[in-house]
Image 1 (cartoon, helix red, strand yellow):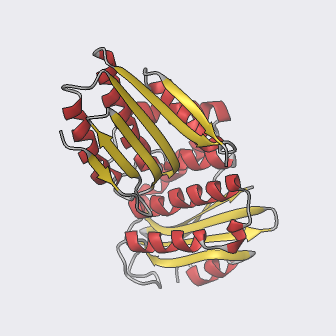
Image 2 (cartoon, chains in turn orange, yellow; image 1 turned 90 degrees about the horizontal axis):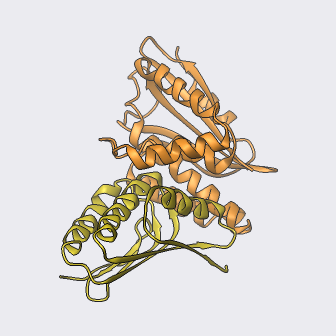
Image 3 (cartoon, helix red, strand yellow; image 1 turned 180 degrees about the vertical axis):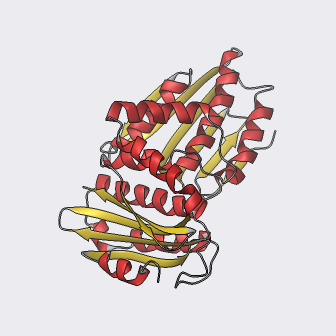
Amino acid sequence: MGFDIDKWYLQKMQGEVIVRYMGEICSEKITETLNAIESSLNLKNEKNQTRKKVYNVFVECIQNLFHHVDTPPATANVEASPRFGVIILAKDSYFYRISTGNYVNLSKVNLIRDRIDQINSLSDEELKSLYRDILGNEVISYKGGAGLGMLDIVRKTGNKLEYSIYPHDDDFVFFAMDVYIS
Amino acid sequence: METIIREGSPKTPYVRLDSEKGLIEIKGRSIPENSVEFYKPLIDWLDKYGTGPLEVTNVNVQLEYFNTSSSKCILDIFKKLELIYKKGSKVQINWYYEEDDEDMFEAGEDYQSIINIPFTMIEMEE
C-alpha cells in the first residue's frame, strides 16, 4: 500500500507549528511561506540572530526542494504535481525544527544518502573548507542550485542532518529530513 | 555608460551600479530561486565597466539574507572586480554585517579567503 504520508505528516506536526505546506513547491508558494514566517509572532520575539538563522535555513530547505524534487509516483496519494514536496516549521521548547519530505526515485537514493552522510561526517573546519572550495571552484548546476545548500544548512545550524528513507513502491521512496536550529 | 538602479523586492536586493561615481551597492536580501537571471545583467554591466573603470571603485555590500544560489553570483561579481583591481585600478569592497550576525560575518570571511581585493568588514549596530 506504499508509504502513509498522512500519518507521517501528522507526526511532524508536534510542537507549535509556524508554517506547514504540502503541495507544489513553486516560486509563489515559497514567497507565501516566507511571508508567513516573517509575520510569525514566535519569531518576532526571538533574538535577531535566531530569527535570521531560522529564516535563512528555511530558505535553503524549501529551495532545495524546489530545485531537486521528483514528480511523485502515480501510486502516491497526493496531488500530481511535478514539484511535490512537504515542509513544516515548528517550535519545540528549546529549538526550531524544519521537516521536509519528498518522493525520490530509487535510482537517486544512494547518491543523496552518500552526500548527506559525507556532510554529517565533517568537522566544523572541514565544512568551512569544503564550502569555500565548492564556492570558489564549481560552476552553478543546470538546475540553478549551487551545490552548497546542504553544507550551508549544517554550517549555520551546527547540527547534523537527520533523515529517514521510507519505502514506497518498486521505483520510489519517501525521503524525510529534519533540521534543528537551537 | 548607463547607471543601473534596481529597487529591492522581497526576494531581490537593491542594486546601484554607477559608472560616473565608481560606486557599486548591493543591499537587502537576495534569495531568488533563479539568481542567475537576476545577476546576469549586473555581471554584463561590470564587464563593460571593466574596459574603462574609474581610478577608484567603491563597493558596498550590505545584505540581510542571501541564499546559496546567490552566493555564487555574488562571487562572480567579486571576480569581475578582481580583474579590474589586477589591471591597476583601486577597488575597495566594504562588507557590512549586523553586530550579532555571525553567519553574515563568516560569509564575508569566505569571500575574503577567495578574492584578492582589499576587503573591509564593517560591523553595524542593530
